[in-house]
Length: 121
Image (cartoon, rainbow, N blue to C red; front, top):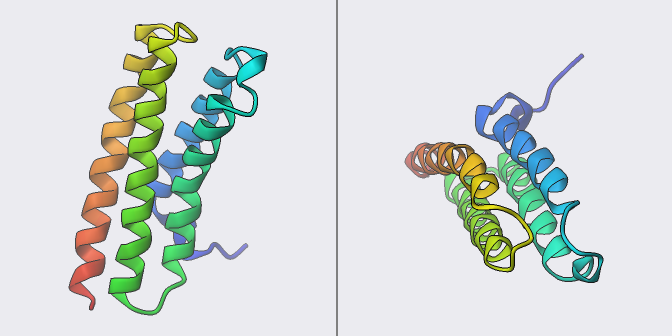
């Protein structure tokens, strides 16, 4: 079986783990948030991997780096929404703290990938 380039990226694989975690965590959110914070955090999280994948298809490093920037922005959006969910008592501080190391790792890897991509321009 042939793998696409993005599937070989460790940062993309880590984003899959975060995505699964966020979907499980957001299942605990109130039903009335189904079209609010629940949908927003899930869309932001899935956007991380999607932008890494889409960026890998671009021909120039500058174009690739732009998608990495978008992925990083989505990652920070997920972190912000986790904090908001804690503020609203939908999840505990511990649940937020459990995700923080993975979010930091993904952020560092996206930034490293972006620097590599920019060198290709």
